[in-house]
Length: 169
Image 1 (cartoon, one colour):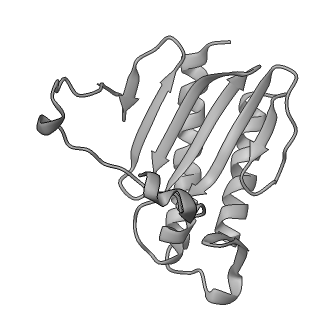
Image 2 (cartoon, one colour):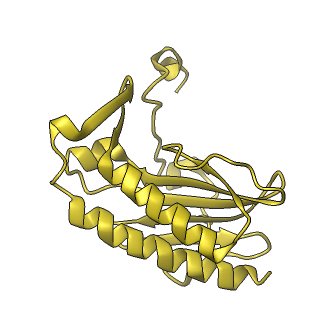
């Protein structure tokens, strides 16, 4: 298996599905939003994007299994398993906050061998695969060379479901 070729095909698929997602921005109404839990929502856009991704990924790597956010298909493959979050940031999407992404990973057994995050609105595609470097839109990226915390920019996020643990942050 040529992993770089696999990555490129998967990026193309994520961009195609991203075009669909972006076209739906602002079209979701309250009666089309399902509540899965506290601060946990799903829309027809999540479901349709997931179906498109699963169908496309089946064509890219036939026989692979899936672990999906919206349970379109949750069958572990004998060797390969795709992990798919079709709309990472559904709450932002619902409120037309332009910060959401498609997240895709591929596992070989119990080991992650590639990861892709495509930020739909900025058209930024972050990706890496086992044994490679990390990239943003084809350009190599790396961690900061800052040695002291006071010279660094620190960004964090907080869990939106487990409020009892917020104090730990």
